[in-house]
Image (cartoon, rainbow, N blue to C red; front, side, top):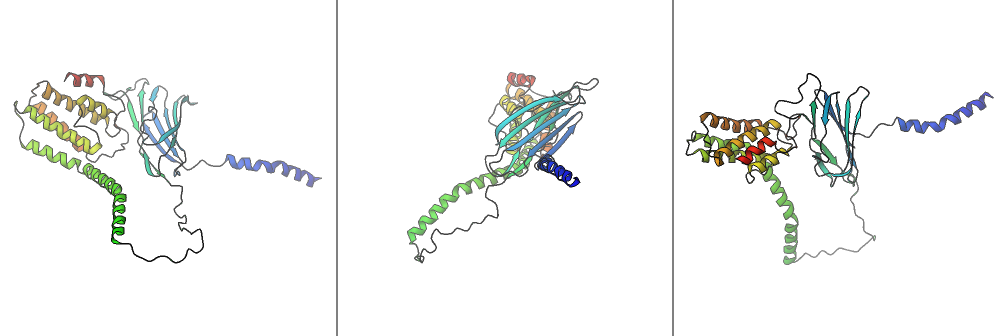
Length: 351
């Protein structure tokens, strides 16, 4: 009788074993980042860690803020590079402790294999708690910036896959050993040159762009030193001095950060600069003040005194030195993704 009861109990328990194994199975390997600033903690999860071309990549951005803190999540599709967005699901809830939990879930589709990256994502917040400063002085909100995420998309064909080709028939007979005539070799060489020409041209353009970016600071610093060696300008040479000074800064921005600067008006450039994730808010404000002062000299006939000219020169030198070794994915302080503020636009428009 006892044996029968044991067998019945075993029969009831055995079907449940697979379900328990599925519940304890861990999640897929993922890339995880955590950044915290004051009352807000930001978590970024990207999985799988090593996708294969054709896989859907899941990106989850979560921001937890204490009670009384207003969290502002990124706009839809901001800074996602060349990934195709398959699905997007935002949500906002409250935790049992009363904190706010804002969440954005993206499902992305890579367009090609190889190394790719997800640019930094920006989360802003306003501290409305009693006794706290809502935002840094002169700014609308605090900022938190995630790190750039590198994703290596593997091709479908494995690296160790056999590449040996076998003929459809076991024996095709002896090969012909005759050599091509001269005109045949000429055609082969011509076809080879045509085939590799686009690749060589793209490689040359990439090398040139990287070399320009590496030498952007040296070029700008040398041009600025040459300009300052001519001495401080008088009233008659003030326009030419500010034209040369702003051209140095704008050319440096184009070579260093890829901003289309020299051919844009000041207002167009400020709008373009506001969309860049590579310039910190403090550097953007420095450039706004510098360009506004220069436009007043060039277009409004302003003749600044020696102290104002020295401040413009110091502003240009400070911007070059502080961005000389700047990494494109900054940690916490970065450029906002909003247009130029109304006051700066009004000053630029007036100028």
